[in-house]
Each structure stands twice: as structure tokens, then as C-alpha cells.
Image 1 (tube, rainbow, N blue to C red):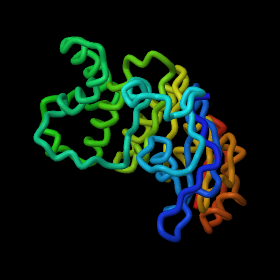
Image 2 (image 1 turned 60 degrees about the horizontal axis):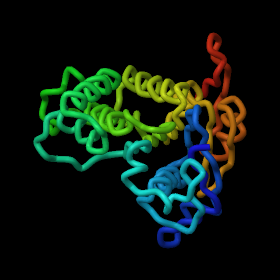
Image 3 (image 1 turned 45 degrees about the vertical axis):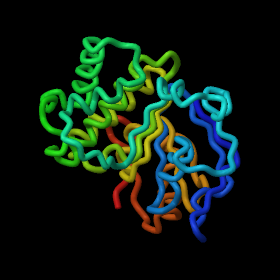
Length: 254
């Protein structure tokens, strides 16, 4: 178990974002969190990353989060937010290498690590470009490379949290990003991703958690969680769910 959270309650004004929410996230699995807009998905990630605070029992690697130093957690926990407000005229390489602040590496070693992560996220050809000149999708992939650089020397199983990592990407880069997330999970990481695309979740997730009004309403494999009845209940739109003829995962058609 990489992360456990018990009895999380969070309200903003009169809106309930987490309602006695409890879950655990294991190493070696890609967990995708789904649900309608405003149902608490991103808020959950912000609680897990301590960007938002609420009354909850939160543990990393079996140890209460308040017993970890931020420096220690930074070596193993990587977080990709929905967006970044970075506007300085850094090059792409400089942005990616910002992730290396927690590494025990020389500049030569850091550059090699950054190159490897930029290759994985397909931005190495942009290394000398100024970050503000990039498209939204390019910026998203650069920040993913920065996150991967940060946890490259993790002394334990990695935890990677991705908040809508494919929102600005074209179809090719959507699949490359989720294939990368799946590979990290297969190599032992605990990967948690918030997505809106049900078909991407169905294709890549090991586990789907579907949320509605701050609660878990489905939790299991894509085949068990993404049923016509459950999708209609949560999204107020009845789909047709079939099975992919080659890979066997659910295919959702509106």
C-alpha cells in the first residue's frame, strides 16, 4: 500500500467535495479516478498532496504524512497539476531540470536524467525552446518530464499523481502519456490519474474509482466499474458499453 486515506471530509462553502471518503492506493497499479465535473476528483488529489487540508487519516508507505519531511516525500512522490502558472523565460531543459533539485546528482548526471525523461515524454527536440513559446500540450508534456526527473532516484516505490494529464494533448500524445503511466505502474509505481475520457480509462486503468458528490460509487476493474447502469447513474447520460474485439476492455459509446 502506497497511500491510504480514511474518513476525509471536505467542504468549500456549502458544497461537499469529499464525504467520509476512504480509499487506499497500491504500488504496481494505475488507478484512474473518474466522475462528473465538480464531484471532488481534483480536490481528492489536492488532499493527498496536502495542497488542501481536511480532517483525515492520511498515510504514505504506512506512515502518517505528518511524520514525513517534505524533502523525503519529494524524492518519491511526483505531482502533475492540471496547469502551471510558470511564465519565466526558461528553456524547456531548465524547466525539466528544476525537477532535479531533490536529486543527488552532478550537473552532467542531471542533464542525462532530464534527457531520458524528455525522450519518454517526447519533448527532447524542444529542449532549447523557451517555455512560454510552447503550446498547451507541449507545456503539459514538459511538466510531466519535470515530475519524472524529480523522482528518478526514488529510494522506494514511486508515487505519481496526475491531474488530467491528457487534457491538452492530441490523440497520439494522450496514448503515449497513458502508456508511460501504465509502464511505470508495471515497474512498481503507484500511479493515480484523474481523467475525463472514459475510453482512455477503460483501456489503460488497472483500477477505476468512480466518484459522485464526494463519494465512491464504483471501485474495481474497468469491466466491473464502467457498466451502462453505473455510467448512466453518475453522468445522467446512458451509453452503450461493448467489448473491444482485440484487447477485451470496455468500449463506451454515447
